[in-house]
Length: 103
Image 1: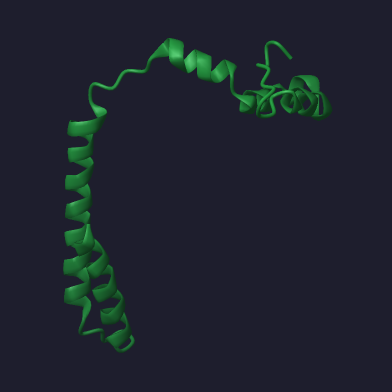
Image 2: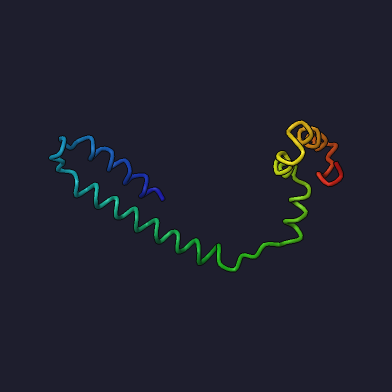
């Protein structure tokens, strides 16, 4: 949205041009702020309607990603300690990946 970027520049320049509490540029600032809110609101509704609705997670694929993620070992730190978790994570280096379950 190039218009939103241009509005931010206008708002900055208008704020700089104003004098203390007697800012004659307030109408421009308010107009651009409300315009940006309208554009953002429209964009969010469009994103929801065209991209988000109807999305469903592939549970099997998510489970595979979770099992193969080294990051999951961070959840084990309180239970097995940092040193053991680091050792397990170290086994997951590129080229010699071992899942957390296998480690």
